[in-house]
Image 1: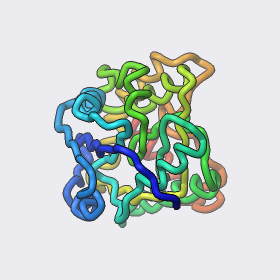
Image 2 (image 1 turned 180 degrees about the horizontal axis):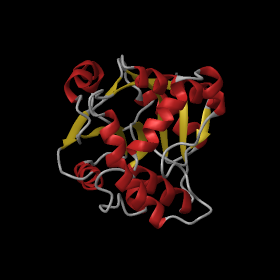
Image 3 (image 1 turned 90 degrees about the vertical axis):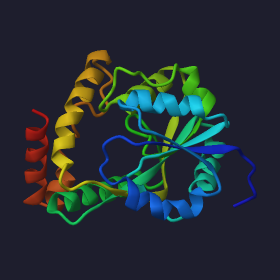
Length: 239
């Protein structure tokens, strides 16, 4: 890749992931080259807004505390951003964990990665490991503080699209997404509040990922026993 000159800061909203230290130790190999801001403010919308206020560079890399990456993703994400002239580029992810339900989640990630293949316009979550133009996030008013559990990223991307600012999902980088196995399903229940808030503010014709993902028949063929059980537990967790 050609030499690139850019100014970037890394923003990490801590917020109940349950696994912040293990992953961040591995990330520090490449994080040392950047200004790195962490927010412990309660409420994901508030935490992200605090980080936006702290940042001064033209580019910001959002990196959740449960994401692990052994190399610097910014040059690659920036290359995609420049090529397509978009406001943000999100990396692909692969869920990591030993429990059966995390293995199902990993297979769902793999299927999504294979389907996308390269790049795709994002309509929902795109902030786990993603590079953004800071001014474009500010241009649409930053994050809505009403989303204190989940949904703040969906809402942001929706407002960016409405303003003509596109975000891409690129599988040139696949990050390892660690989760807390003990609180996995509890977090789904917590997300219900955020998804409900999101649904209340959306138009009927635009509903990307509101109450959990749709049933995927390709996954049913791939994992005929475990996948339906996973979807059942997901549905029960959202009640």
